[in-house]
Image (cartoon, chains in turn cyan, yellow):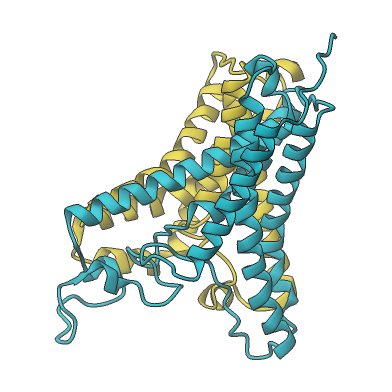
Length: 230
Length: 173
């Protein structure tokens, strides 16, 4: 099969990657002033025998993962943009490249989670209060102390309680762990259909590295609990 | 027989999680909790059907591998089953690590709500990623037959279980 020469790294590519890195820093900064409708995943470390060292690790590692995932998401979007710049192969050929597949799948999840937050904000604008039954499903609405409805911002109590009760998760799109699942699903589809065709170029290599890192962050999210010493 | 057994296993999972259903039924916020109840009723059955589908789709006679792997229903079924296997493996490892009961680990937030619902975002994201690549890569070749149709229905159901309740929660107050 005839292979076209890989596109060279241009100044505009560098600018796009730089802008994505700046965006990553911006989102990291937002973490320290979180919006009330955004849940930042935090790990529970209430095991009675958890050691101090383990608790430190299980606090630090998820925070590092949040920061890493923020940059990975930004870079995935940037690489998608860079990959779609001309000259480029046809879309069908592009979709056989694992780097492109990983970035597309991650971008899909970011778009979905962004749409959900937009929908939640529209819902908030339409109705600025939320029924107590949604905010706290276990609460009895006829309880004398609790009002029937609460202003929406008051619903968020700390990082672990979300806008519409504990059963819904509005996660910041830049840190969604589902990006890892989408990348694995995309790579599985490529492997199953026999279309795993990596391109020997810097764009696809970077895309594969970002994809592996996104999957690794998903695995670390699961594995972090094993640090707690029993 | 495999699907009937899976259905029975799904009903057993629903029965195990009856406590959370009672909490939903007690709540006066009817429409939203009816939807929540619908999700919690269907996810256990979807889970067992997906695992059963992986067995059914592999049974002979089946298409050749190349043709098999281009069928969105079969790919969705296999990817969803792989996602469930991945998530349940982590939960099993946590059981082994802590030697505690599921409910004890769940109350501490170590494991997701696997009995009624909780894994659908993970499974749906795997299916979404796989279908995205099949569609954009021109590999979407649906075939006739109930196995293919059933696989596609499973894939769509996982996506809906994830998307619909989240969107509705934003507006149903």
